[in-house]
Amino acid sequence: MKVTVEPGRRVRGEATVPGDKSITHRAVLIGAICDGVSRACGYLPAQDCLASIRAVRQLGVTVEERGAEVVVHGLGLHGVAEPEDVIDCGGSGTTIRLLCGILAGQVGKAAFLTGNEALRRRPMRRILEPLQEMGAAVIGRNSDQLPPVAIRGAALRGLRYTLPVASAQVKSALLLAGLLASEPSEISEPARTRDHTERMLAAMGAPLRTENRTVLVQPAARLEPIDLHIPGDFSSAAFLLAAAWLVPGSELLLRNIGVNPTRTGLLEIARRMGAGFRVEEERLVCQEEVASLVAWSQPLRGTLVNGELVPLSIDELPLVAVLGTQAEGETVVRDAAELRVKESDRIAAIATELRKLGAAIDELPDGFAVRGPTALRGGTVNSHHDHRLAMALAVAGLVAQGPVTIEAAECVADSFPGFFALLEGLRC
Ligand code: S3P
Image (cartoon, protein in one colour):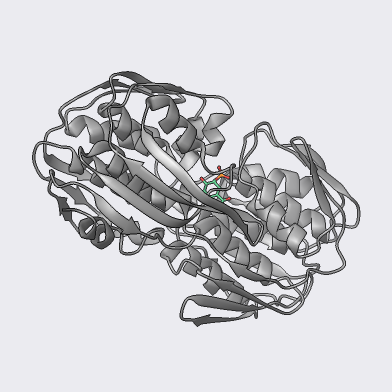
C-alpha cells in the first residue's frame, strides 16, 4: 500500500492513541502464566500483539477479545500446554523473546518458534546463551544466532548475569525464566531499559525487587491475575507530538498517554532541542505513569543523544532524525547500534530514505548525524516494512515542499492501526 502525505496544513486538536504495545504483549504473555483470569482494558489490537495472542492460544490459553478489553485465562506458571505446531511470532521480537523465557522452564514440553523474514534476521543469541546457562535446552539457527528456535523445557537453575546490551526484551525473558527456576537470580543491565515487566510482575505478587540496575528475582509459587488499564502508547504518541513540533501553527493535546520514565527519553531530547510541550495531569494508573501531553511548534536546535538516554528513547530515534532535518545546527545520535537490529536496520533505512527527500544526514556505525534546517523536497520513500520508519517518513512529509509518497505503508498496522486517518483528522 502506498500513502501520500501532502504538506502544509497545521496539526491541531485533541486525540488519544492506541494502547501501549509493550504492556499489551506483557498482559497477554504473562497473563497466560497467571493463576486465573486477567483483564486488560485498552489493549492494542495491532499485528504485533495479535502474534502474542495467537501464540498463547497455541499453548492452550483461552484469550477473549471483548471490545476494548482482552481477557486471558491463565494456566499457571507451569500449566501451559505443549504446542502442537510451530509458533509463528510474525514480526514481533517481544513475542519470540519473552516466550523463550517462559517456555524454557516448562519441564519436558517442546516448542518451536519462528517468525516472518524480518524476525528471522534478528539476534537471538542474547537470549539463548543466558538461558542455556540456566540449564535450558534451547537452540537457534546459525549457531543460536537466529530464529527459528527450538526449546525443550527443563528445570532451570538461578542466574547471575549482566546483560551485554541494554535490552528490555532480554531482561524480561530472563526475569520470567527466573520465576520458573529453582534458585534466586540477579539480572543486571548496563543502562536502564523499560521496566513494564518488573512493574507488572510485582503487581501479580511475584517475589522480585530492583536495586539500582539489578533486578533480584526469586522462584515463584504462583502469579495472581490482575485487572489492567493500559495507557496510550508513548511511542505512537511520539509521531503526533513530532508533527505538532514541526508544522508551524500547530497545537495538539494528547490524553491518556503512558509516561513511564523508562519510555520518555524523547521528551528530554525535545527539551534539549527547544521543542514546545507540557506534561499535564500526571497520575499513576495500574502501576504506570499516565498523563496528558500538550505540544506546539516553535524553532528547534540540534542536540546530541547518547549514553543512558538511548535506551529510554530507542524506538523514537528514527523520528529524532526527522526532527533534526528541521533543527538549527547538528543533531547527532550515538551509542545506538541496537537500531541496526530492529524491525529494519533503522540507521541505514532512515538515512537512505531521508536523503531521498534532500536531508543532510550521515550514517555512523552507532547512529547518525543530521545537519539542519533543510527544506525537504517531495518524493517517494520506502518504509522497509518497518512501522516506525513509515510513520517517521509521514511526519517528514508534513514539512516537505511537495507531496511525499510512502511505499509499503501498510506496516503501520504493526503498532498503530489507523495512524494515517488519525493524523489526517487532526490537520486543518
Ligand atoms: C521492547 C523493547 C525494545 C523496543 C521494542 C519493544 C519491549 O527492544 O525496541 O520495540 O517490549 O520490551 P529491546 O529490548 O530489544 O531494545
